[in-house]
Image (cartoon, rainbow, N blue to C red):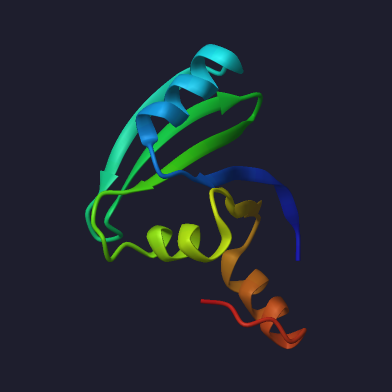
Length: 102
């Protein structure tokens, strides 16, 4: 498996506007975009942080997975995404080493 870099870090938040204000105004990260992902029931705000992206993820529907995550774990690290050279080979490698990949 050949991990190239951390592609992005996703943070689950209850209040996207408050999260944006904190990351932009307090931490000084530039907001680079926003996107609604209807299929997941979320809105995502993107920030540049060096060559890694920080994503804030907030539910726009009550049944969104991120809501269940926040209920169980609270706000915070939602996922960490690695950039790899070959996604299929990486999944094969992980499965061969006992990791379930979806």
